[in-house]
Length: 178
Image (cartoon, rainbow, N blue to C red):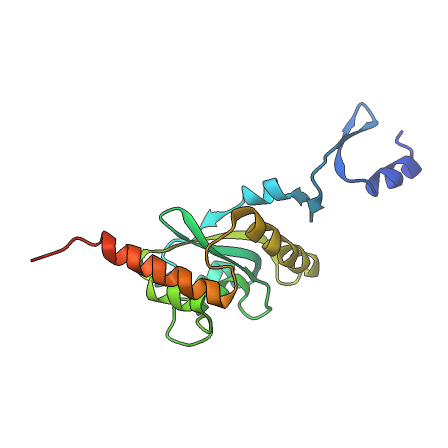
């Protein structure tokens, strides 16, 4: 039988636990856990959001987590949706509808203006009723920004310069017609 005191002691350590033949086997990890996963494990949880430009994402209305905008596979922006009223669905919708909600900054303006050619992915962490999921999502955002270094998650003056460069490169890549 497993000694409950031993189990409680293991519960305070970071690692993975497996019970094999009534023994607790712990595999430690150098990587810290966020919620119940490492940062690398969370990073494999991104899922595409089809038709985000046109449709409100009802299936994400009560889900909290991270979202990211991509252009040709390049990550432009990482954000978090944790609010009770809409959560991830509302945050994504803020960038596609004609209101200032998602476009108070340069990055939001760029995403709105180019929404027809951008992709969105989400990483669902949990439900809006789970406060720990919201805490984990807020904890993951700066870590994912540091890991992926999205171009538009930087201070406003730097963003304005990057948007000018992106617009210039997009215009230069358009075919010229007589």
